[in-house]
Image (tube, rainbow, N blue to C red; front, side, top):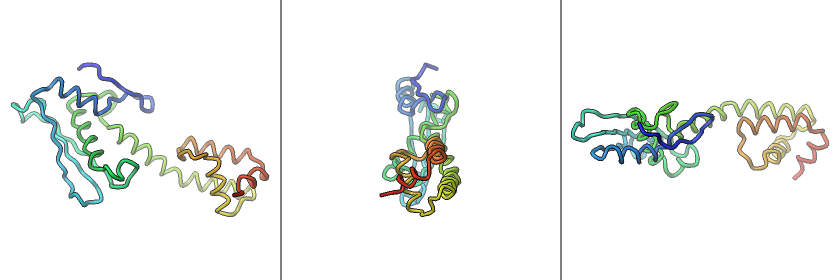
Length: 184
C-alpha cells in the first residue's frame, strides 16, 4: 500500500479520512463508497453504516463498519452530527480494507472523543480537589473559587494538564494572592 500522509496524534501516526478517500478514489476507480443512516433522523443518537466496495463488479467483497454520534455532544455535533458520523464510518470501513491503517482504524474524531471522555471523567474529582485546597487556604465562597479557577485557566480548556497547572498554582499561592484573584 502506498505511503499516505499522516499526522501525529498523541505520539501515534494517523491518516486523515480525506486522504484515505482520495487514495481509494485514485486506486479503485471501479469502487464505491456508500453510507446509510441507520438511526432515525430525529433520534438523539446518529448511527451511520458505511460500505466500501473496491470493485463494484465483485460487490460481494465489501468492507462495512458503523459510527455513532450524539447530537450536541461536542462542538461539531451541535450542527453536523450526521456528517461527522458519516466521515468516521467511512474512515473505519476504509481502515478495515487496510487503507490508512497505521496504529488503529479509529478515526481522529473517535480518538478526540475518547480523550474528552477520559478528561471529563477525571475532571470532577480534580475540580473537587481544587475546591478543597482553596478551602484550606481560606477561600470558602463558591463564587470566589470559580473566579480563581477562571482567572488561572486564562480562558483555556480545563484538560488534565490545565487542571494540574491550576492546582499547582493554587498550592503555591499565598492566601493574600488567592483573595486578590477572587475579587471581581
